[in-house]
Each structure stands twice: as C-alpha cells, then as structure tokens.
Image 1 (cartoon, rainbow, N blue to C red):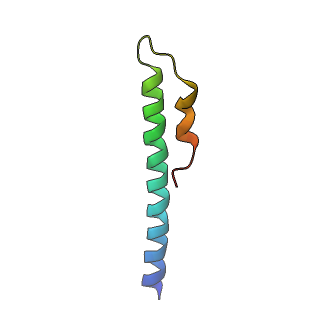
Image 2 (cartoon, rainbow, N blue to C red):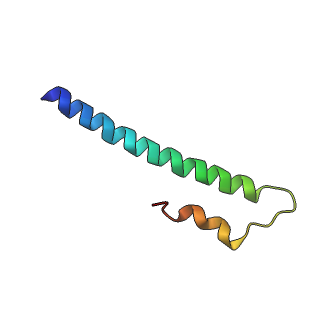
Amino acid sequence: MSGELAARRLRKRNRLLEQENEVLRKVATYLAQGNLPGKQPSRSSVNWLRPTS
C-alpha cells in the first residue's frame, strides 16, 4: 500500500512540475517578445495568462 501512495504522490508532484514548466515557458516567450528591438508588446500578448484547455 505504501508503494501505491508513494507513486500517487510522485504523479501528483510530476503534474505540478509540468504545469509550472508550462507557465515558465510562456513567461519566457512573453518576455522575449517584449525585449525585441523596435517591437511594442501588443494587447494580445498577455494571452499566456489564459488557460489552454
């Protein structure tokens, strides 16, 4: 039973880390777009905040 509990916790932790990585990738993309010379960030550039169902 403890092996099942450990596996469940690891799956939950993995899911959380994957979600965090997705957010970090989107933030990095957003920031990179804003730092391009001569490019103004558009109003739609905050779309990374919306969930991707």
